[in-house]
Image (tube, rainbow, N blue to C red; front, side):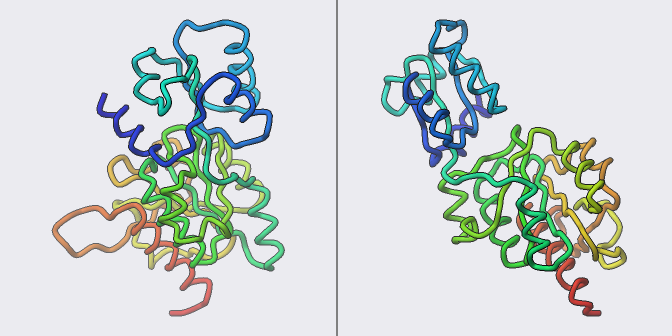
Length: 257
């Protein structure tokens, strides 16, 4: 129940689409849909069509109780179906690589794992833009989407920084490795970031403050980088950690000692 309340808060500023016709129209118009909630056990024609559209677009489907739908509904007229639509369009990973090529730069991507706080995501997108990263990649599951809160926190950076949502972060990393990228993971137990070579085509992987980067994602990183800490607590906020490491990458790219 606590997780459900958190999810509701995180998506409070997401466009909520309610009703069978409205959800179908959202899919058919190409609106980016993050998640669909369907009344458990409802399998009539329109609902089956919505489920088929969701699967075709690789959208997460959650079958829930009527009570849960009533909690999520803003109108009380959900007809057994509610969709969360992103406030902004998602990009493709390929767009980020093309952007790097157009700028004549080595690709610099930021990949996020388990980031569910919209304020953290917005702050990281803002840092990505200022640090010259070519894009931010987030997973479809266990991640906040491009809500209005994310856009506001990014202070306008979302208009200029591509964000892609992928089904499998590990698979995406493997594909990017074939394109010449290597990956550094942020972790308090890693090697001191100043001792690592963070130049060249690079993906910076950052996890949540509590859970960190998932095991499989971490195992697919080439290096693990730690940020020096001198205080009494042992972890940084995810957006702060992303900022510190992103600017170490910037410093090394500039060749500053």
